[in-house]
Image (cartoon, rainbow, N blue to C red; front, side, top):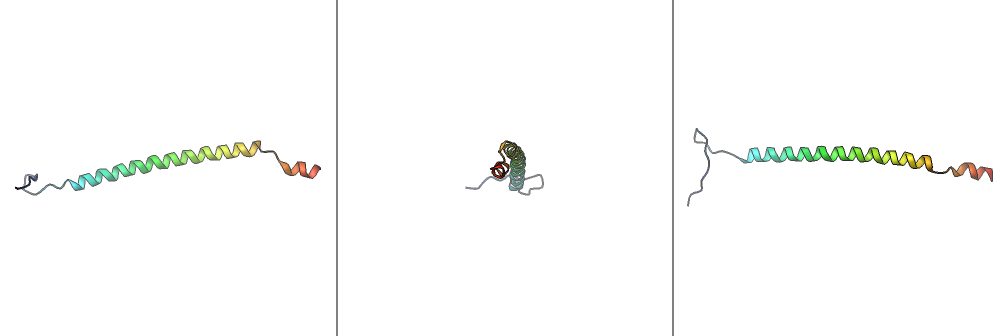
Length: 67
């Protein structure tokens, strides 16, 4: 039994792996961009929370000197 292969107008076989791999590379790039944006946003939020906690933390060095 012979397999059916698509051919272009010149009779050459069509290669679909090239377009398939390009599509997967583009999808990988989209995931990398989404991950990068998420990490940057998370880091900014983390730094803001750290600064807020530093402001609320009591300064024990002054009270230790007073005693």
